[in-house]
Image (cartoon, rainbow, N blue to C red):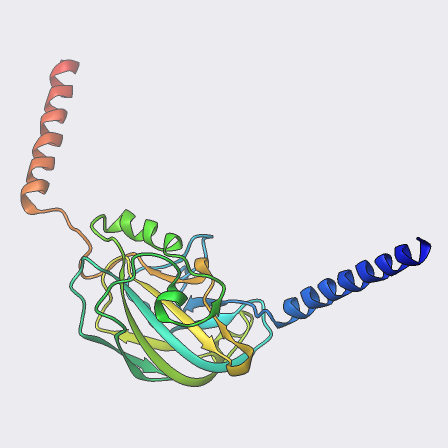
Length: 235
């Protein structure tokens, strides 16, 4: 009986060791996520949900946070609301250059972005991390058209020294409520995705709603009427 108990304890200890060693090894291979950044004060600051940019960002890129620095194939993805007319393609210029073209004529409307793109990447980018903010600015959207370009091998720095990382520009301007995200393919080490809150979010675009002249006239008339009413009441 004692021999069987000892064998059982040895087996349990071995299984525990294997589980712990596997967990440690997995933790060591998990990379930190990418985060978008932009030049200019107050641009692309992570607010816990996304990283807003007032208009299509200039001189933007990605860091790996907290690091250390790494390198791999940088794949840029542009997500535009699927109810908006977008360009046939987007030109990427700057430190790296290329043309982002439509990944699929079928919009991304559910699941994770990596699954939609047919790749294995971490962290997960579920559509629920992106769509609510887009719908808040563009209520007609139900998903995103995805434009993609592989910008080739490039170093990605930590947030303390971002300007060594690629500085990129996009033209033409992106529609309101679009996103910019990146994936870094490190080959055998896997693919790193952008943190959900590190995605660059365009809060002003060519399709940003503006009040119509008739609406402005109506608002002005209402304010004038309210002012006249208050004057009469004082008298």
